[in-house]
Image (cartoon, rainbow, N blue to C red; front, side, top):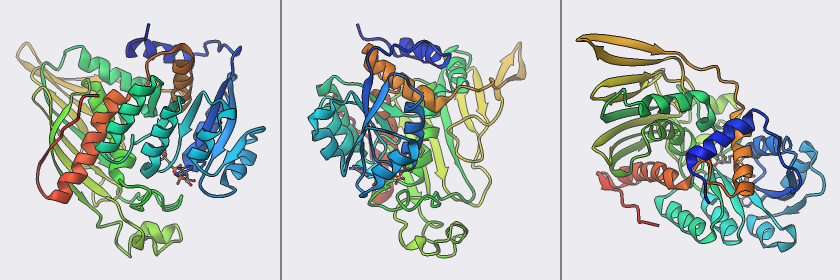
Length: 392
Ligand SMILES: NC(=O)c1ccc[n+]([C@@H]2O[C@H](COP(=O)([O-])OP(=O)(O)OC[C@H]3O[C@@H](n4cnc5c(N)ncnc54)[C@H](O)[C@@H]3O)[C@@H](O)[C@H]2O)c1
């Protein structure tokens, strides 16, 4: 019988605590896209005694081979695209990590699922809601595991936040505010795949916005988004004087910039809840505010971080009324030494082996994606839009 998400969550804890791993069957894993984040994947796969890396694919000739050499991967086969690798039936792949830039997330994931291969897909899920729907259909038809790479989910503080909300102490939740960003932090030191329209597709929205949405939506049970008024801008990214381009030695990068560096959205969620959101790769303020959750019995302040607000920057503050008095209760941060990325990889492998539920399921993340792409679409159209997500 398939496990519930809660059962799967318990398993992560056990995995993180060093549960013995059954090595009688090695899982045959491939990596699609051997760029920057693939390094975190290989680093963690190499720690897993039940994993054999059998295939590496990248569009850039020689990149997969150089990656294998750097990480001491022996015996893998190399390919120049996801299709080449997935078409090679001799590989007998059990799973792949899709570590490509956002614009090829959907095609790689759908192709892998159609071939009957389990997928760990990097965040954001993809670029458009239409792609997310196609991914969900392929997942359903395949019966395979598809997990989306939101490693902050495994931080004990994220779990604590969810537990606080689930305790009912806030009463009926009617408003949430989330987001964050950086004063100057367009991610160009690693090249231009994040900032070009053809590769990134989404900018700050897809890079860090998806995390800050996940933090609060997961905490309150992922209500369905119904409509959105969105705004995006690119004043910093397109500026020839932007300091970050000079610092990374590429003053011409403003010519390549084709995505958002700031985005904001006002979203109606099922259950009569309003989501107020903003995210920035660059802005002239330190933070646009902490994340907050307002309920009829209590309010919660979740301090922002100065990088992106997908994690918790300090003790939570609970505002409530006791015996007619307005009180503030501080909820201390938990010591967080969980290796979240390792747990993300381990939980994916365990789900493949045990036939469990996806650790971070696409049934939730499609709502996250609907908000990201809805903000962009609403901005392009210049008015509020309805969000329609077909049943899959
Ligand atoms: N979870 C995290 O903490 C985290 C951190 C950074 C990036 N990411 C995500 O990881 C993804 C990749 O980011 P990155 O910084 O590694 O990008 P990158 O540009 O360094 O690497 C992407 C690689 O994918 C390859 N590629 C693209 N399409 C392909 C295809 N069809 N077949 C084979 N190879 C293909 C490219 O040639 C490139 O080498 C992004 O979606 C990003 O949002 C996640």
